[in-house]
Amino acid sequence: MTEVSDVEVADSTDENAVPRLVDGVALLGEYEGGGYEEPRYLVSRADGQMVLVSPLLHELASRFDGQRTLREVAEQVNQDLDADLSPADVAYLVDEKLYPMGVATTSEPLPDPPRSDPLLSLVFNTQLLPPWFVRAAAKVFSVFYRPLVIALMLCMFVGVDVWLVMSGGIDAAFHRSVGDPILVLTLMVLWVCATLFHEFGHAAGCHYGGARPGGIGVGILIFYPAFYTNVTDAYRLDRRGRLRTDLGGIYFNAIFIVAMFGLYQATGLPSLMVFMVLNHLQILQQLLPLLRLDGYLILGDLVGVPNLFAFVGPVWRRMRGKPDDDKAAMHQALRPRVQVLVTAWVLIVVPLLILGLTMLLIRLPLYLATGTSRALQYGEVAWNAGGSGQVGVLLMAILSMLILLVPWVGGTAFAIRTGRRITRLVVKLRARRQARPHARHRKRSGRWHPPKAA
Image 1 (cartoon, rainbow, N blue to C red):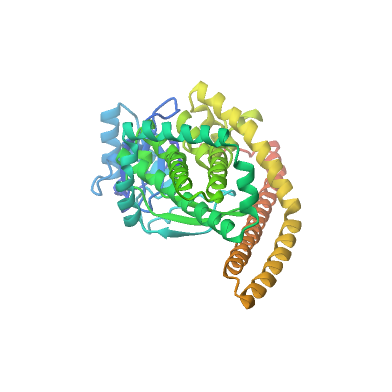
Image 2 (cartoon, rainbow, N blue to C red; image 1 turned 90 degrees about the vertical axis):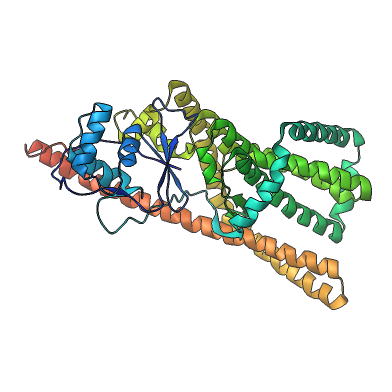
């Protein structure tokens, strides 16, 4: 989710140029439940990414029909909104705001819309299940969002939790499962199934609200594999619909735990009890508003800010005493209460992430060396198990090697990405330092002029 603001600037331009929307762009109306002083409007691009724009930019885009010229668009907007835009102002807003975001253009070639590439994002991500399959399954699973079904499932989930606490068999179940390769393999299979079911919860919540979910994919988040569901279309829903989509994964985790309780009562497998406990830990992990997990999305929709990480820079600029800076203005556009909440999130989460990532980078060589050594050990185990016909041990060893390979690949990719970000930051800071003396010299010589507004 990207947000842009509008700035008016006058310049020479061709008044007869015809602005038009990029193919595949759709105007979806107001972003409901936003935490901004003035409303924001949703624009969907052809690649499925959503863009938040100001009322003025939305009004302009709504009048781009491929026939009206810049002059005609300016006249119509001025008449409808009692504004004072010139054709040059409209051209500036198109070329400097809407065009870079892949929304509108006045010339060819059409832009290649930039996609966000946050540091803490998935690498080597690929689609696992196609959109048509996910939508069909979401339609089936949407029955779980009927109010009576939700009440029943939550009551059963609470009952299972009470039973887990009162049963007193958790410790014994862990001891029996850890030493048995088949039971450990069962835990791994259940974990994958529960994680996929978690993603179907997001898709089903999206479908129940009236939006169209996309495909389900898998990638590597720093050290471990992670599934994800494309529910970008849920941004068109109201706040309740978005929160339903956000909470859908955790809700489906609860449903899966209830199902595992029933299977445990029928089979008595200790690994099922272990899995129920571990799945609770997965729920708690998802609720943390640190990385781009469910808790982060839930918090963003509660305060009405879809991309909290985008406000790290604006909050920092305001704290440095630069309230007139464009980035700081982005923070000031929020409602006062939302400004406080977003600032608190930045001040708590960012130091924790910096500390954690710094420690991770320092310890990364040791982690990778240990993982490589363990992988070689499991290779020997797999070789011996294959020769002696121990199928369970063989499968466990192979899966263990694959699991150990994932952190190695993800950690290496994260280190490379971090190194590139640091290099770009150093180059940018050096360029600024070199430009400052030149700017001061021009000011002292009397030939310095403030730059145009941008």
